[in-house]
Length: 291
Ligand SMILES: CC(C)(COP(=O)(O)OP(=O)(O)OC[C@H]1O[C@@H](n2cnc3c(N)ncnc32)[C@H](O[C@H]2O[C@H](COP(=O)(O)OP(=O)(O)OP(=O)(O)O)[C@@H](O)[C@H]2O)[C@@H]1O)[C@@H](O)C(=O)NCCC(=O)NCCS
Ligand SMILES: Nc1ncnc2[nH]cnc12
Image 1: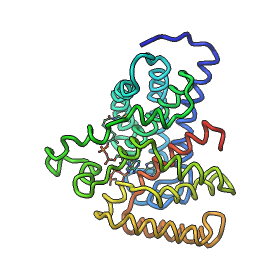
Image 2: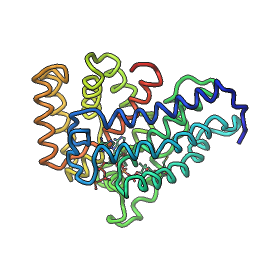
Image 3: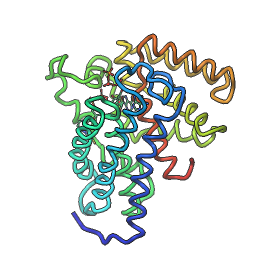
Image 4: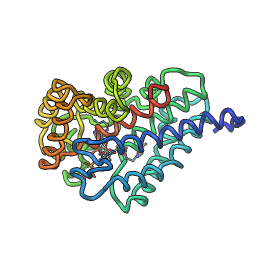
C-alpha cells in the first residue's frame, strides 16, 4: 500500500466523504412516514429496533468509512480494482461486528455496510486517482460478484442460507449483489433523477425518492417477509397509486402513504433493501451537491 502525503486539503476531502456517509445514514432514518421501515415516529414492522438503534448504528460505522477512504486513497495504481474490493471486504466484516455491538445484535445496516462501503470506497478512489465515474469504478471492483458469491450456494442446506441466497436459488433473484455488480442502476437511473427533479421539503423529496426506488427494485427483505415473489408487482402497484394520488406534496398522496404504512405494518413487510438504496442515493446527492 502506497502512503501518499496527507496535505490538509486531502484530509479535508477524505473527511467530507466520511461525513457524507454518516449523514446519509442519519438522513434516511429521519425521513417519515416511511412504509415498512423505522423512522422517528414509528418502528413499523421492526419491533426489535427504533430510531435510536439506527442513530447508534450510524455513528458506530464512522471508523469503517474512514478505513474505506484511506484504503482507496493509498491503493496501488498497478493493482486492479477487484483487489480494492478484496481489501475492503474484511473491513466490512469487521464493521458488521461493530454494528452488531452498537445495536445489541440487531441487524440495522448490514446491507448498507456492504453498499455504502463500496460506494464510499469508489468515491474516494475517484477523487484520489483522477477518475470521474464512481459507478463505473464500482462495476470494475465487483466484476463477477454474483457468480462468485453464489457459486457454492446449492451446496448449503436450506436453513443455512441467507434470505438473499434462498431467493437466488428459488427465484433467481440476485438482490443486493446483482444491484451492486451492475453499478447500482436503481440509484443512477431512477433515484438520483427523481431526487434531482423532486420539489418540496427535503423530507418530501426523499419520500418520493424512496417510493421510486420501491417501484423499480426487487427488495429481498420484502420478498422474505412476504414469502412470495408476487409481493413485487403488488408493491409496484402501490407505488403507481401513490404517484397517481400526487406523491408527497399532496394531501391525497400523503393520505395514501399513511394508509400504506398501516398495510405494511399489518402484513409485517420490510423495505430494508429499498432503504439502503435510498442511503446510497443520499450519499451521492450530498457528494454532488444535489441536496
Ligand atoms: C452481500 C451481503 C449484503 C450479504 O448478503 P446476505 O446473503 O447475507 O444477505 P441478503 O439476504 O442477500 O440481503 C442483504 C441485505 O441487503 C439489503 N438488500 C436487500 N435487497 C436489496 C436490493 N435489491 N438492493 C440493495 N440492498 C438490498 C438488505 O439490507 C437492509 O435490510 C436489513 C434490515 O431489514 P430487516 O427486514 O429488518 O432484515 P433482518 O433483520 O435481516 O430480518 P428480520 O428478522 O427483521 O425479518 C439490513 O441489513 C439493511 O441493511 C438485506 O438485508 C454482505 O453483507 C456480505 O457479503 N456479507 C459477507 C461478509 C462481508 O463481506 N461483508 C462486508 C462487505 S463490504
Ligand atoms: N429505516 C430503516 N428501517 C428498517 N430497516 C432499515 N435498513 C436501513 N434503513 C432502515
